[in-house]
Every structure is written in structure tokens, then in C-alpha cells.
Length: 272
Image (tube, rainbow, N blue to C red; front, side, top):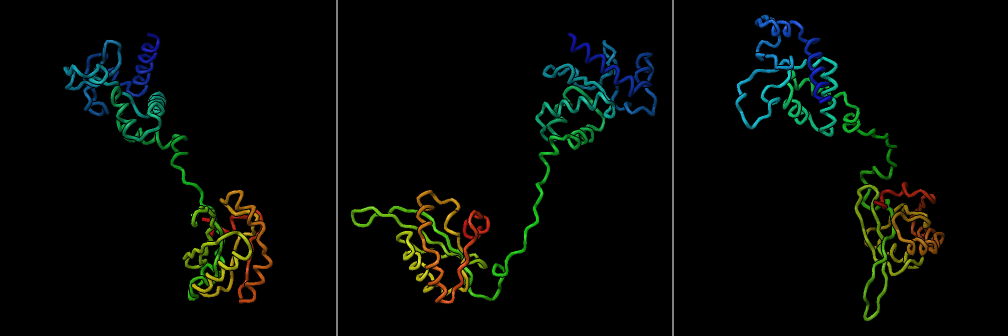
């Protein structure tokens, strides 16, 4: 009962502040002035002195009494603003139509959509949901990433993945994938590597060069931090003799570039 009494008090207070002339006319049994904003709503006072809308659905048995005759409120009154915020929060910050429909069940607020739109647009939680993430400024691409007239795999990146278990005869062995990607066209070429030894890596590079031609530059991880590789693969890659591989490639006119340790983001072209 205390809540009901408080609601009745605030309704009468809000209506008295927003529509003093209309409340006075209804209390005296006089018609509303022609300039009244409530003229088209046919307002009436109930037994508690609250101004409600007089509609044509008063005989609808399925509807509740406050739905048949909703309370009239002004959208600019502070109580109405607090009420709209409460309905918006109770609806879990849903869209404007949901909040407007819930308010319409008990109250008649003129320009309801404009009112609900202002409530939703000023809600900080909704602002956080609608906020767009800041797009960081990206650095310019290296020159070998934007070449136009070089053949594919002129500049390539290489990485290992695996292992994969294969059946040879009656024994089970492990094989690794050696992935080459063109840094300008993003084409890929995959070779099967029997192991992670230096000789096996050189043979995979030779097969790649036989198919695609000799690249001018090759980029790869340093061997100490292959992103996404398991521990066994990471440990085995440490045994690769990078100096031997680099020397072999130099003889074929290929420049080998290793990215710094602990910086897998520099090898994003072949990591993703």
C-alpha cells in the first residue's frame, strides 16, 4: 500500500506541475480550454484525483484497469524522465519499441517515441554498447608487399606446421608441412618435410625453387618462437642450423631474413 500511495502522490504532483489548468478545470467540472494539449485525449479524474485518458475500451474484460485508462504524464517532467529510465533498465536496455510498448501499458506520454529515444540515447550503458572501437593507424606495408610486376614467390615467407602421423608399411612416422607464401599475391605452396633437420629443410626449399623458381628473398621465424606450434616442434626447430641454410641459399642468389626472436607479430603473413 505504501508503494501505491507513493505512486498516486507522484502522479498527482507531476500532473499538477505540468497541467495545472487542466487539473483545475476537471476538478470544477468545466471543459478544457481550446488551447489545451490534452484536448484530444478526453481526460478524466479518477477517485484518487489522478488524471487518466478516457477511451473506448473501458468494457474490455481482458485488459487491466490501468491499461484501459492510462495515466497522463508530461514527457519533460523530472518524474517522467526517471520513470522512463526505470522502464529502460527493466527492459535490459532493449530497443526503443520494447520500452515504448511497456510504458504504454500504464501511461499515456505525449510524443512517446521522442521521449523514449531521448532516454535510450542518453543512457551510458547503451552508449557503451553502440560505441565503435578505435581503429589504430597501421604502418605502411613494406615494399615487397606491394610489388606489381614481379612474378609470384619473388619474395616468400616460410613456416613449419605439424606434425602429422602417417603410416608407411607397418610403421608409423611423423611428417611436417613446410608452407611457403608469396608476400605480394598471398599465394601458398606446401611441401612435405620428413623431419625438422637442416638437410630436410634444405631439400624442401630446393623442391620449392624447382616448382616456383628461385625467390630473391625469404622471410621466416627465428626458430625460437613459432606461433601456435607445440612444444615438440618448437624444440626441434632450435636444432635447425640457420647459418647453413642461409649459406646454401646465398649460393643461389637468395637473401634469407630471420625476424627477431620474441616477435611473432612480424611474421603475420605466414602465421595466420
